[in-house]
Image (cartoon, rainbow, N blue to C red; front, side, top):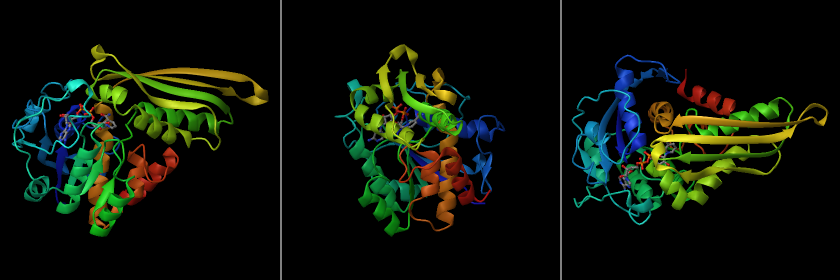
Length: 347
Ligand SMILES: NC(=O)c1ccc[n+]([C@@H]2O[C@H](COP(=O)([O-])OP(=O)(O)OC[C@H]3O[C@@H](n4cnc5c(N)ncnc54)[C@H](O)[C@@H]3O)[C@@H](O)[C@H]2O)c1
């Protein structure tokens, strides 16, 4: 089996969990993964080959050190060994104008040519984990992947799969792409969808529901000040199709509490009726660490994209988008998305 060569853009908290997770699961752990193997690929078949960031605290460092540098503050999953991959200076695009309260301390290094760097590294997949507010910079990474013939995984909420023009160009170039906005393993959006699907499947009539978050990571600042409407729209739309009728529904992040660090508190509320019109109300609170919530899905989607490439698929790969993202081209129920993904990967 060939190795899956992976490049990462954005060496923040999400990237930290992903990179640590690759070493952790390579060292023989299995608990916490959704799939140990997918289409014959295990986590040990994933090889990191390149990394890009724009923050002076990360650019020039070995990726193993950069993921632990400020302002990253997610969980230490494992004691990292050196990776021999230097973080390269990426294009700044709109990352500074849109970054919440100066969280990025920009490096003065000249940006590299990302297309050339991807080609030189032999990357099969570029994983975009840059700040959610940097829509133009995300697009620049997507363009670079397209030119390099490298599959693109858009974990950020910026529209790539949902940008008709660029999605079509991936299709024409014969390069697969998956996005937008990663759906976490047990995050707030997927939990909200699952609870709504459950209530509906048990015959309950849902009359009102909301899901609100409080977090302390840089991405919570971005969501609060820069991408509130985009995130709320993505999440509410993702959740809204869980039941086949409309009702008052809000789903979206609300506030930033710095001492929470990378922790996220998610509050859910449901009100409705069931047999004979009897009323019910449900309050749920979920506490998670944000970045590791992306890890298992990222490992699945990276392997899914390599399998899609091996099969000659191009453009937005719908089974991967439906399984791993909040804003796929077409939304289906969670179980159906899981089934479509499993059919694609052939397990
Ligand atoms: N559970 C999760 O972590 C999760 C789930 C869904 C989506 N996402 C998305 O993943 C992305 C990363 O989330 P995070 O919590 O790690 O954020 P973060 O703020 O911790 O990290 C973002 C990183 O991107 C870097 N960056 C910004 N602009 C850049 C550019 N032009 N080139 C290269 N690097 C750049 C920053 O310096 C920082 O290191 C966000 O878009 C977020 O919405 C994360």
